[in-house]
Length: 242
Image (tube, rainbow, N blue to C red; front, side, top):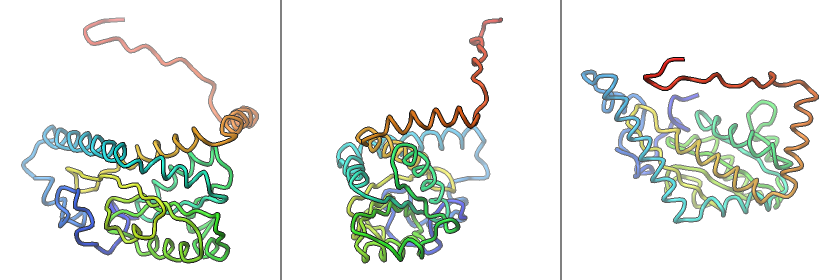
């Protein structure tokens, strides 16, 4: 698993929205962005400001493009929904899979173990969908899986960081996320937020979502999965005493 990317091969110019697309590897960005003479407070301020800006700009882009509602409609129209991502993108794929599987049927995470790309590609139907997370440096496995899945007749929703990502021309819907960062690692903040946004919009229009959630709650209680709820202790405000 890589520290900050989805691939081991660079794609020049593919991340024009990032602070410096020429810095394609974590090592290159470390030396440029984390100065040895900067204090922890200075680094913290820069990172916080960059994350706030990246998230705000991503939401502005998505509100203008309508990409998330479009992707949600494609997801709802599918019979089987497969989700994939390699490297760090595997975490985003897992996050979206966990949320969607709570409210939709036939949601499958391609993790390379319980479910492999080979297994998926042997039986692709025209109502099947692949949701692919592909971020710079664009893992070859994700690109090849997307290409073969699309060639077999399936649909493709792409979550990426650039309009020039390898799978963009093949996608039925593309969600572009800004990953600008003041750190050596590309930002995960907007990616996580977009996963949350996409699952929420999809669930809001999904038939039977409330019923599935109710059943899950009942089963969680029957299985005794969680600790009993306890009130959160009150934390006194600054300058006051208990």
